[in-house]
Length: 109
Length: 275
Image 1 (cartoon, rainbow over the protein chains, first blue to last red):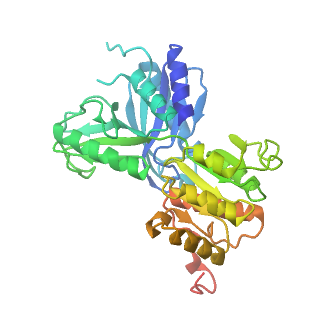
Image 2: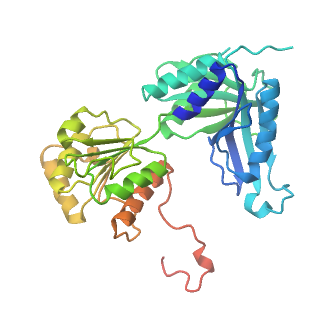
Image 3: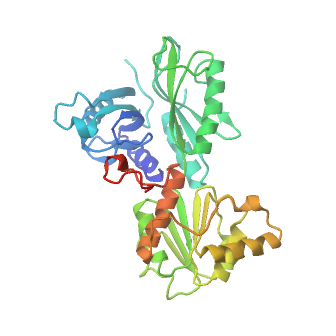
């Protein structure tokens, strides 16, 4: 937890925007833990995890949008519709809250 | 409106003093005027919510639920109507919140640096506990034996325990070389806020220690957090196995587990033999 906030504080203090992803709920056989968290940075690097391969690509795609527009949003991922042939392993629904963090106040158009 | 940079600073400040707070995030809403998605307030015990979030009914419910979240230590999503009453997510009208407790990294204090402490300290580091080892013998309590520990103290037990602040996030394992040291340490830990005080020893020995302490005037309620003999019953024999049994017991407590196997035994030949 300490490292999570240290990462956000350090990056935002340097003028960068950071996107966080936190698992809000998880239904079905998804192994994710509520409160599991991950950070996405502008340079493409990340910190932490929201549960690995099955969901992380979807979360990452949304996090890139958050980094672009600075708007926090909730994301629901239906893993049953996953056409990767891994549905048995990753079936279920995952709800993730994505948030934008920056040291500058948000400027809205 | 909460300032996000200030929220991050508040979290860091709370973590530095090992205090626990709750981030209150709006996840979504329908039919309730609840404003923007994302962090909306910080709950601090004794202080309540840092900012108004939605209706007075919702704010009142959020403060109460945030307090419960801190007690359980686990994050939680809740749906409330405009009056702050819990509703189903299929409800026509709801505001959905994530209550995310911000708590310091859990600690494991290992009292005694002997043969069980070595694998236990390694497991604790893997489990991302801040790991602290103490023993008065410098040839046991040293960096070479505990390369992954966050702190290793070669100091007398009493002296160390009288100074060290055991808080709600500090789990303690008593595995000294002699029961009199375990007993001495236990005496200093009863009444501390530690959620777990595990003590090694046979059932007989544990009975003797309890008897001694009860005779000294300690109340039975003070032994509520004491786990002795220590560890889940997995038939552990070697130091590494015992360390796993101890680590499993701590995980079981943190996650409110059931401490038994998960396999679907009814599909096995000989099902119903009680195992």
